[in-house]
Length: 287
Image (cartoon, rainbow, N blue to C red):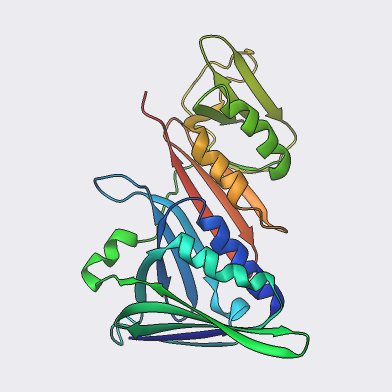
């Protein structure tokens, strides 16, 4: 197996660094799936039992890399799966905050498999190179099925998200009062974030948001507290993980959607067309 890629564009390097920093907020470990057309970051729930997806991130090769070459397991499965520390990757790529001419990424063998990052720095006409070796585990072909792309097509509603920075400020305050967050939406473009405790109920409402889809005729009947909306779609999720999304993924110029399966799941989708897409899957908290 071989892998070598080169980034020379400053904007692409900055985005690549920001994505890696963001993913380190979700988990200590991640999977990098390397294919001929895309690079994927995959993070699973940190729990025993069958793996459940938490984060699925796709980066198109053509946007980021000037040079790119991958030789996978064989001609039929021309892919590579690597597992490594998100923290090590984030710290290594923080060098990109300086003036860097090129970033080279290679799969190497230095007594053990490594993802080697070579960064050519330029400072006051003096060039230097920084090299970081990140230990990796090569995932064998028989385990690839554990990291298949999650496919959910039964969302009852998909709605535009409000300004994430403003929402982050609200959710940070709610977290001090509850560990769970009720996310609900209706077909009229209202998205609500609510906590309920024995002492207090607090809700933040965002209205006039664009509704991308709504499953008419398939909605479980519920009773909204204000008596105005019998078809409110909602799911109760862990507020800490929702805040990870808001805190970690500070990526500009993105389209962001919230999709809900009533009583089961919230999916957060962030897309910068042609540059990246990120899905975060937050399952319903057990009662």
